[in-house]
Image (cartoon, rainbow, N blue to C red; front, side, top):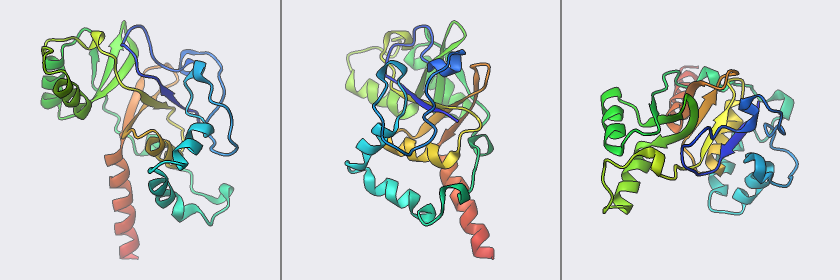
Length: 210
């Protein structure tokens, strides 16, 4: 149930963590004891989570975990992220221009695009990030290709990853989406903050009926 963060970089080759490319790396699915960040594997580690505790994000993390704080770890409900993620993933090749990417998002009604390079996952971009990049680089053309940009960091997780823990790491890294990767290394879905809002809104309605 590993969760990983891929560092910012150009969409060349694959930016997937090694575990999704058939190599063995450390499992970072449990937030327990602090450990040193393994930069070579770009893992979302406990040390990074602890750093987040010392920032302004700590309050949000506390509020999220408050409901389960009085429960023993083994008694907390397990919710695989595959149960709440959106299975539809829209992909574009790295040579796609910013204008084309924006048009595809508008046509498909999505706010995230998976960027691929030679059939491999090479990045994940959000509509807000694209608009912010254009605003910060007003001299650049909308015909600039994604392959020439340094794309933002993105989270990856396996379908059986616990959705509650993934939410905590999304908060810790200030990312509102994570890409779900199937065993074959291909995208199996995407989970966003909207999916979590929908989940807990449904839970609230069910509790209200009770």
